Length: 193
Image (cartoon, rainbow, N blue to C red):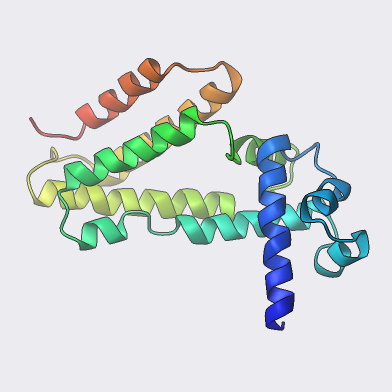
């Protein structure tokens, strides 16, 4: 693929991400993407055959951005507690923020049965976050800032709790205070006094 073609493809993926973030998955049409990109319908179909294919490409791009979320901070010898707080602050922003977030689109896609065949990036993204969190917890145990815990179980518990908070935020609405309380409880299970 030539450079110009790659740029056009990226333009489409970026525009599609915005549309999916705004409308979810099930309500997006190729016409929505055409309008967001400002390209012809034929131009869009040169790159993508369906909204499903385009959504999966958006998710692959997201996965690339999410990989190894802590490695840079841990490599800089930051304290594990500080990295955990940065991580929780970012998670809080995602949980409370509704604009620009793909979570509803992901849930709609999965609930519609879209994620069953090819196991796209959803599970890999979760596993990548889980592994990064495990490394962070191990680093915190090593430097004495975290309690001795079952690393895998603690990381899994945090990931599941964060996913639950995202769902509750979208379906019931959560206050900032409620999210803070839950994140504090999660940190309290790890951080040695």
